[in-house]
Length: 315
Image (cartoon, rainbow, N blue to C red; front, side):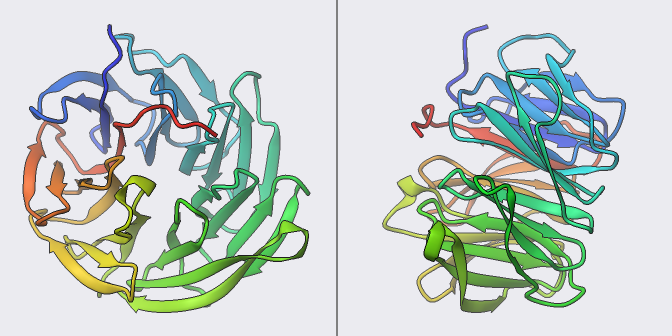
């Protein structure tokens, strides 16, 4: 198989992962995933592999093969894996789990290389653009920065006591971090570089984005500049697009019939893909907020999506 220029994948409670032609909406490959549901999908920077975070393992599938079997399995978590991502040149992967740990995996070696204890179920983990800090959010409302150079937790904050942090996102230039919680609130901080290059959080804004849960928040990519946007996907069936300059509401994406669990921007920020409990994924225009395409095929809730339509990043 030749490598597709656009890789779009979704996963559902129907125990399948589907690959889609983004423009036509045709599903061209289905992987059966019988062991568990898939909580999160992520594509490697080189577009070669798709990571599926399940319970309690992570499986790596070849994007360009038809094999239903994973090429690798990562197995030391003991509960649902809720977060997965890759370092920018693809040498290592990070994960966060409801077992309370954040782990780092060298893709060129077996086993887990590092483990950090969050002491509560981890819902979300993001990698700072500096590639040396992981930021995690957990069920007890804690946000922690894990300094990979010092191999320790360098910062800890609790924006709202006993309110689960569902999703974290960092601006591509490392200037902002946003945490979204179960009460529909987004907390925004400026990230300041302190002594010993430690990241400091300076409170910038508190945004009451939705009345329901926010299940995913995501800041727009570099090629979207000079526009800077925050997308918030919610249990209220909508996705809202906020202008980061003042956090004013730009548009509301309306069309999904149930909870919207996940969203991902195209590389230029012109489009957004969303995944919902209504069993569909959808493609939206950021210019006018209109729905362009509906991806139909899953039999149950579609809870995560992954898109890679850019070139391989240079670290």
